[in-house]
Image 1 (cartoon, rainbow, N blue to C red):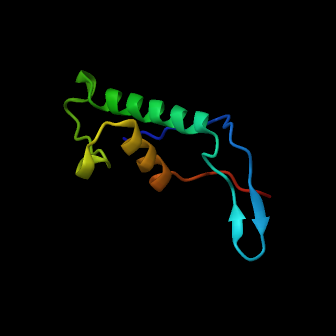
Image 2: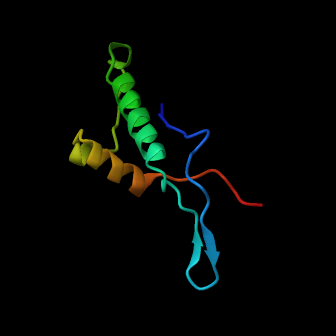
Length: 88
């Protein structure tokens, strides 16, 4: 089982395309998006630790540094988030 928090309506606006530097999508440029993902990640962790999941092995990717501060979770999100959106 994998928990995948998703922003369905992000507040961040798309960035710019620079021929030299590449594409800057400005993901998470709006702090509301980062806050929403922190809340979603906390909810996923709460569900995974609930009694219903006791019989299952839950692998939390944050285990090496199981820190529950907003700052740590924000950095985790910045580092490991990805997008499924494709500009066409």
